[in-house]
Image (cartoon, rainbow, N blue to C red; front, side, top):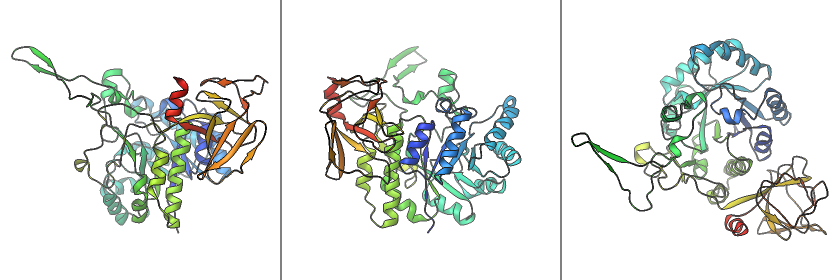
Length: 428
């Protein structure tokens, strides 16, 4: 059986390893040059990106290289040079946005598959055919497309792979076609430097040119002024419908600038959703419980199964972002021997252990900690907090850069977390 691919974001080498450890089949990312995520791309240099590709390949996983901004005439030679450099690293595909760059990439790196970015806004079989004829192997369809339209494209071009976004930030504009950031900040969204101006609160005014009078419009109580703030996409409850269609080749998670916790938890939730579907035990409530632990702008199932004009729940007008149900307490190191504090943690605290995919623990107790299983989840109670330099702590606070010795080795990049209300109480 051909199984759908789970594609996760990688903003840096650590997040790449976390995404793969928590269940991704492939990751996407790149250096900042000509990527639509300049800020996250700066965390990858050529050396660390090459290391990430080699690491993924050692696990039998894939890496798709993002070169998906739109070029100025003055940048064309720079694009050629960058594509050539990326090709030397042997990624599994190049993600590009414009037809000109599709042709350029095909010429410079003919052996590397080309994936067409969602920024190209493909919505129908006619446009898909044009790109397919240019040599595109996969199209990341526009976020506004419907599953029925994906089925129509696949019926015409069965060999064309289709990738859909299933989770993460949504754009207020049509698949990124926005100039608000460029107007207010001089930062061009389609060249990788969007300032997310749609996430800000705005005051509304009415102006009468005949009287030269301006009135401030008063909103209803608690409705708010985040008038362009789109909710986050969350399609976990519909993974079964998407996979049952048989026309989608890859499920994509947005979030190269998001936290390691987001990458790990969201990837793991969709890994379970996919695997459970094929095993005949799909349970949307389980995946949603995990996804709601992350910070979000409110969730919407967006447009894949409903037309835009049928949706009235895609905007979050009252707030820009809200806490999830949990807070990260610590992230375990790659070697599993230490952890770094992300939220105030004291001796006697009990934190939940979030494990990468495919690993488990055995309950134990020693003079430094206790690991117990409660209702199917593992918890760690700390009896000592000692850094690798020998410094002892009663409590350690968020942002402290001391590496704290784990009383027992845990799997690479294990996450330790607690409920959000408990976290807030500790800070009060």
